[in-house]
Image (tube, rainbow, N blue to C red; front, top):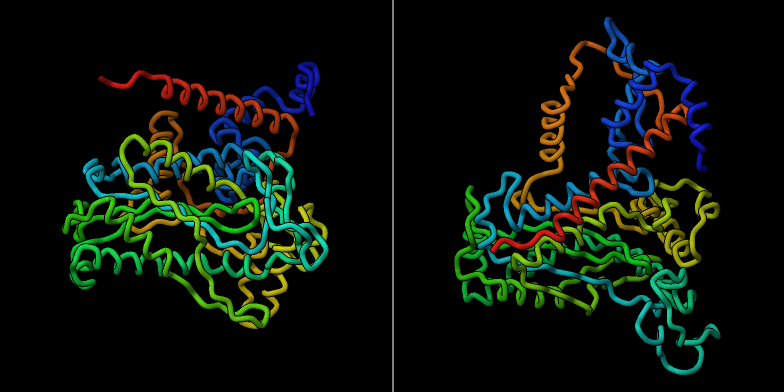
Length: 433
């Protein structure tokens, strides 16, 4: 709801000038967080006694864009720095990592049934006739990315929703086995034993999970070959980008896992569509941004699946029929003893891993990036952290007054414009000669 300047002035009168300025400063320090956490400290000389409404507003720091866009933008920026530092150096990582062999790996899911696609030509030129359920096996429409039908099954009754859920739940294990298989293939390609390779070569990586429109997980990863030891040095045995790419290509075609679901024994494998690109310095910024953008999304893209579900809640959610069937399949499979994890992660379509994971030595951590930003803020803003023996209590989330929400919206919009201006400046800057 848009407010006129006169209406904003009336809302501002609800707070005195002192509270109004204090609230603006607090919201600005939180970056315009849309759902801040309200905390109250009890004890002698409580630091919240002088805060507006007697509570301290702390940024929620969520990664989900559907919950808070300003905080998710910060998380996305941290993810971009984390990915980029492991390829170019910086943030505590030596710049010598640029000499290490590295590849960009994209792993897809297999087909669980025909789905509508956004292509340059017709959607799906399948065989003529109808499926056993009386629906056509093909679609000649030309869909765009914004069409809601994209990603949904041509025939929901033919689509194997249970297998899709099991794949999402197993993709983390597939990645673990893939790295093991890739090491074996790399040793074979270099003509050394696996034991010799393990003693001298370490594979470091960062991996991001992307939930596709069809409701299955794709993995994007940067894999780097290092020498073992405390210092980050290039891997020996002439480990090249081409040798690393070939090892992962062979491993991806061989890796599998067996799982039981719905009374069936499933052989879970990766999709046939595989892309492995050797990394060079020119592609690093684009890849870092490409991976970071997936860290703030949730399954439905609308925020309806950004929390764990309760009994009977699935029917109340505003979801497409395709997503609802996947969520229902995960919920039903989770009712079996030993498969309870699928019900706990039904809101993520069965995927229970973190959206971004990395090996320990790949680069810096989110904690280090947050500590560095906090230290910069204390040094530049003059903010002194509160120290004392107080008891902190949670009093709620969000803003109590509309004027505070309008402050947050204004500050968040200004920050977005600043980021865009900075991006525009960097993208149009002439390269160094």
